[in-house]
Amino acid sequence: MAQRNVYSSKGEPEDAQSAEEVLHSVMQELDALHENVKGQLNQDITRLQTEKNHLIEDIEELREQYRKLQSQQMESLSGRYIQQQQLWLKQLAQVLAHNLQDLLVQRFNELSANSGNSLSSPIPSGEFPIPLPPSNYDERASQLLAALDERIDRSFQMLEQDLSSYESELSVRLNNMKTLEMQGEELLQNLVNRIREELESEEEYLENPFDAQDSYVEESTNSVNSVRPQFLPPTPVETRREPMPQPSSAPPTAPAKVASQVQTGLVLALSSAVVLSLFNVCLRILIKSRNPRVVFGLFEFPGVVTPGFGNSLLILLMRLIVVMALMPILATFLYPSVWKDIRRLFESGDRALWSKVLGSAFFLFLSQVLIYLAIGNIPAGIAITIFFIYPIITVLGSWILFGSRPSNVGFLAIVGITAGLILVGWPSFAAPAPGGGNVGVGVTAALASGITFAGYVLLTQMAAGKLHPIPFSLVNFAAIFVFSSLSLWVPLSENFSPKIDQNVWPGLIMGGVVLGVLTLFSYLLNNFAIRFAGAALASVIGTLGPAMTALFGFLIINEKLQPVAILGMAVVTLSVAAMSVERIVAPQKKAG
Image 1 (tube, rainbow, N blue to C red):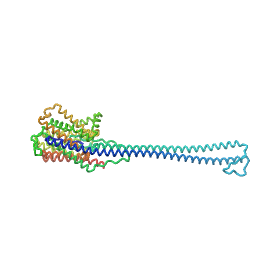
Image 2 (image 1 turned 120 degrees about the vertical axis):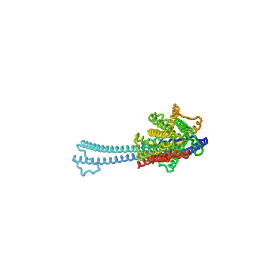
Image 3 (image 1 turned 135 degrees about the horizontal axis):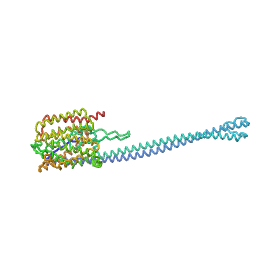
Image 4 (image 1 turned 180 degrees about the vertical axis):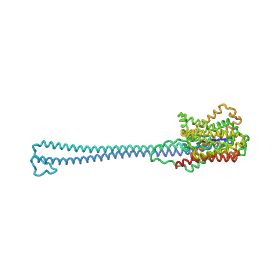
């Protein structure tokens, strides 16, 4: 999501001390919340470890029971087959003995008839006669034995065939059992691995409950990342990974956010928009004007620096010093793996990714310097509204680069934003700017800031999915800090060089501290707003940025706008809000 630009000004020592006390108290409350959550999570981890050990013991018992049942089944099967074979052999022996007896009786009767020694009665079955030895007894006995051998051979061949078939069937069944055993072991191993993975993922979540990865997947590369001008980079979109195969008994997905969480996220998003609007007004107060500005109608504040390119660079650098001092701590709190990701980025040697990261940081650097210049010359509300030309450039650029054609609502929103920008900018040229600023420079700088911010958004979309949003933001901060330092170190012409009175350095330093603190507060509130309400809803709240900036400008420094400018601001806000609402409705229509 595209992030916003936040701006601030110098405050009195009491205000600075109050801000430090508020920051200190917030940090203490965050530490107390961290300790409380950490204690509860440690208890949950201990309980999960105990349950994990119980599950492992149960799995081992199931394995042991499975092995016992398998051995018992094998023994029972082997015993049944042995008994069956013995029964077959016994039956075969009885059949052979009966057939052999009948054959012998028949042969003896034939021998008796041929030898002339007829018997008075036939030989009954089951009895063996004792005939008189004939003359050719040896020959007939040899024939009888040969026939008997042939019959016995055939019987044994049939028996051998039956035994072979039984053996083949038994071998097939044993192979099937072995296959079933391997499948059972594989299923059991998959079940154990699945339980182990779930326990490990649960432990990782409990150890790092503030992992922001899932909070940013709602960003879409087909539309504007954000609707608020912010110094923080928009969230890179996580690439869609191929789903891993899971068993049919996979647990259901996590339920949607409850209504209370969404309400909390919307309140945080609104708070972030308020902080950004205060930033813009404070930056307007920090820059000098023809007449001193009256803050809250109580006291006059002449400003610290005059509007100009070099002074904008200096304000940006002072702000970045505070941000770079505190942002690593905040990034580690929000995403503990930030340093591992940055180390992998440096070790990867991915030149394409580095070119996109540094290119997006350079465009954001130019956008920040130009919007500072614009706010110094024209009212903050008008400057921020003109800055909102960047959704048009972003949508058209996404159409050209990514083939993401805008919908009918998108085209209508583009027309509305264009008309609103004309309404906002026209009164600025028709009348001199309050405070004596240069209207042409202010409007031109605001337009250029929106265009360069659109380039930053497009490059960020190209690098989406390769780096987590928080490490991406930290690298962008560091790169912009380097660009600001180098820009001030390189000799510039008189028109572009900083022009600072030596007596205003304390006020400039204090203003940089206030701007940096407001930046980090806005970043923290916006981050938690995305966690609770989602990026799409948070961006809808962000459309209130220009209107709130104009409102706070009127309340704090009595900076009035003409009705035509207010109408244009409303048209731009509604048009950008329509884009954001479409991002929420379009996926639901596709899913339906």
